[in-house]
Length: 259
Ligand code: LHQ
Image (cartoon, rainbow, N blue to C red; front, side, top):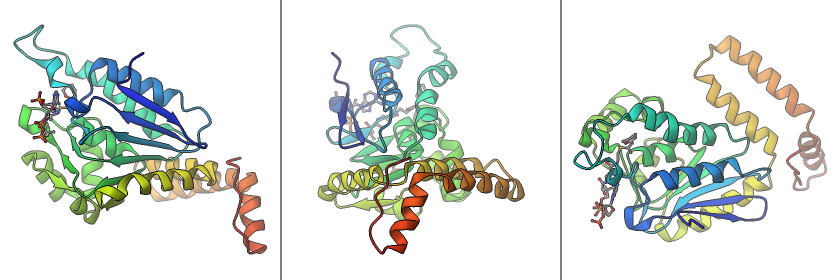
C-alpha cells in the first residue's frame, strides 16, 4: 500500500502527514489521490491535523511531472487545478470540524496555499511561505489570490505574489497570515494539544463558525446577520450548548460531546 500519505487515528481526531520528504512533499498524482481519500475518510473525527514529513511541509505541484521536454506540451493546468488541487481546497474548507495545519518547513506554491486553506495554521519559526508561482511563469492558485489580499491587504499580497519572496513564519504570524509560529521543537506538541482541544470541543459550533466566517466574504452585513441568527438557532438546540451553560452555572469544565 502507498505510504505517500500517512493517516493516524488519534483520540477523536485524525493526523494526516504528507510523506514524500525527498521531494519536500511536492504533490504528484498518487499523492493527490491519497490525500483526497484521506480527507474524504475523516468521518466523525472532531478535528484534523495536516503536516509534512521531513524538512518541508509541501513544495506544491511536483514539477518532475511537468517537464516540458518530457511528454505532451502544453499541459492543461486548468484541468490539473479542477481535477486535483481545487478538490483538496474545497474538501479542507468544507470539512465540518476544525482543520489545523502544522507547517513544519518550507511551504511553496500550491503547498503554501493548501496550508492557508486550513482553519488554523501553526508553523515552525524556521518555516517559509513562498508564492513560488511567478518564478515559473504562473499565477497564485489553490485559492492563494483570493486569500492573500484578504488576510494581508493588497500591498503585502501583491509583493509576495509578484516577487515570490519567502516569508518567514514569525513574520507571517505578525502579518496575520497564520495563527502562530513556534520554536521548531514545540510545533508538533502544540499542534497535537490544539487538535486534542478541538476534539473535545463543541464540534457543531466550530463547524458553524467555519461556515459563517467563510461565507461572510460573499454577504453584505445585513444578510450576514440573518445567517448568524439561523446558525445560532441551530447551535442553541445542540447538546453542547446545554452542557456549556450547565457547566458555566455549576462552575465546572464543560464536557462537550460534539452533538
Ligand atoms: C521538488 C519540488 C517540486 C519536484 C522541491 N517538484 N521536486 C498547480 C497547477 C498545475 C501545475 C503547476 O502548478 C500548480 C501549483 C504549483 O504548486 S506551482 C509551484 C510549484 N512549486 C515550486 O515552484 C517550488 C519549487 N521548489 C523550490 O523552489 C525549492 O525547492 C524550495 C524553495 C521549495 C525549497 O528549496 P531548498 O530548501 O533549497 O530545497 P531544494 O530545492 O534543494 O529541494 C530539495 C529536493 O526537493 C530537490 O531534489 P534533489 O533531488 O535535488 O534533492 C528538489 O528538486 C525537490 N523539489 N520542490 N515542486
